Image (cartoon, rainbow, N blue to C red):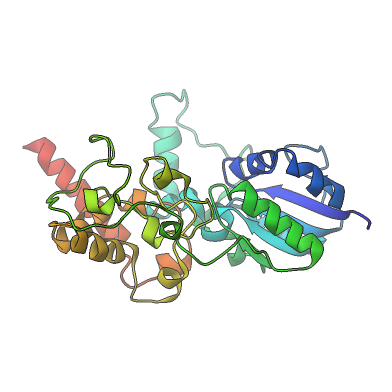
Amino acid sequence: MSSIPVNIEWLSDCSGCHVAIVDLHEKILTVLQAVNIQRCPVLTDIKGYPKAKLGLVSGAIRSEHDRHAAEEMRKSCDLIVAWGTCAVYGGIAGAGNVHSCEEIFDTVYRNNKTTCSTQCPSSEVSPLEPSVSPLDSVIPVDLYLPGCPPHPAVVFDALLGLVEGRPPRAATKESVCARCKRQMEKSEVDRIRKNSEGVPDPEQCFLSQGYLCMGSVTLDRCLSPCPLNGIPCSGCAGATMQILTEPNRDIRTEIAERMSRLTLIPKEQIVREIERTSKTHYSYTMATPMIGEKPTFLIRKWTEEEREDYEQDHND
């Protein structure tokens, strides 16, 4: 069987998805026997977009360059994979949607103590889009592979599936909780704990112990390494399909509902704490319309309330 030509593009992201390919270790040899990587920003010096069967695109649409690159990949590739949470949902760059482009430039360039000029770059940097958006806001996508980055096992299975012409087997619709071994138990905990507080019980669910954990509302594309190793889930693979597809289901209310049943902490207090830290708990998915356009998603209001509370505390 002849190798399948592959193009890879890197938009606004951190390069972690590219590193995930290297993390295939010896399995990468199996992949490389089946594919011919043509364009890849970190491996090849090809500037154009040669014709390819498969295109892997990581990163969000943040700049005009991102839009142009995505469109060129769509023209040159028969199949496009939105590769990683930034491409699927907009990722952490989506936090920029809480602020205007002018506010961002002011903070990064004009009012930054580490810069020596108050001028913003023009010709050197591609202009920003009005807002951050997922890949499918610009081009049609054939396969979604969220994760920050996707686990090497999921990457391997997805690539092999595309080569063999079958659906991926490892990409299930289960949540991170489905693989976590911790036990949900009713406790007497009456306050929310910070992740830096104490050492969590390795056998008990984080929610039962008062730690905010997003495992129950997060899609499993990681094989649950964080909760299995003592760290609450941060939601990096994006929200579950129930959250994304049902207008009245929301990350904060779903977590609060479960946590309030497992502890003595009032549901309203948990909801308010997640709203107060909304840039953290919605950081991976706020740019996708499936979250950002929900009538229950009021992040500008939440962040403004938090700013006012902060200023009042420091003025007092």
